[in-house]
Image 1: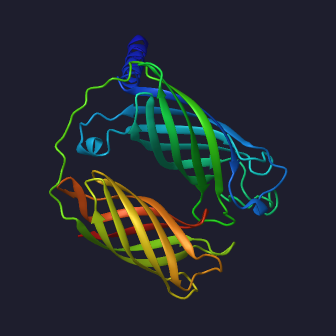
Image 2: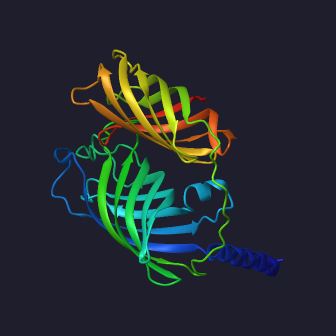
Image 3: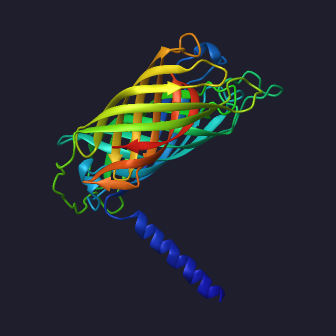
Length: 348
C-alpha cells in the first residue's frame, strides 16, 4: 500500500510538471527597485528605497476561445511578489499574489511592447496599532486588495529565453474597510528574465472577426460602497445609482459616459459625471472609470475619483457580453481608497 501511494504521488508530480512545461508556458524572475508615491508627509522617515522580486508563471493563449483572438492572444499568468515598504520597523514587508493578463500591443523583430494588469490579494506584515505601531497610517489590516499596472518591452533572445525591462505601479489597500488606510502605492523599475522549458511556439487557432453588433449600448445599475469613514465607527454604506451610454468599438472595448448619484452616510447626496472604459474577455470584463463631482464632494479637494474593478455577464450575444451583470470595484480619490463596492445592473 505504501509503495502504491508513493507511485501515485510520483505520478501526480509528473503530470503537474508536464502541465507547467507545455509549449508557450514560461517562468519569469523579476528584480524590482522603486519609490513610494505621493503622500510623503504621511510617511515615516528615514526611508529606504523599495526593493523586491517577483516570480511569474504564464502561458500564451492559443485562440481556442474567441476572446484570445479578439485580444491579440495575450499571456495569462500568476504573479507572486515579495517587497519591502521603505521602513521595515513601521511598515514591514508585503507579499502579494494575483492572476493577470499581459497584452501584446506592438510587435517588432526585436520584441514586443506589452501592458500587464493584475488584481489579487496582499499580506502586509506591519499594521497600525494605537499602542504598538501608532505611526503607521498606511494600513490597518494584514490582508489587502492588490493591483498592478505594468508597462514593459520584451526582447526576444532565443526560442526559450526573453529579457524584459519595464516599469510597474503597485497599489495595496483594504478599500477603506478599516482606518487609517492611506494605502501603499509604489512605482518600480524592473528587469526580468523569462524561461520557456518547452519553447515559445504554439499552434494558433484563428477566427473570423465579429462585426455584427449594435454600436450604441445603454447601462443602468446600482452599487453599494462599504467603508469606515471615521476610526472606531461601524461600517458605513454608500448606495449609488448609475446611468450610462456606451459606444461599442469592437468585440473587446466599449467606452461610456454617464451620471452617477451617491448617498454617503451622514452626507448630502452627491452627483457626478462618470466616464468608463470596459474591456471584455467573453463573460468576464474589467472596468476603468473616472468621475468628477458636480454636487457635494465629501471633503475639500476631493474633486475627482477613479474606479477599477471586474465583473461578470452570464449572457453573450455575437461574442459581446450584455444583459444582467454583477461586479466589484475599488473607488479611490487620487491614490487613497474611498470604498469597495458591489454592484449589479443591466446593459442593453
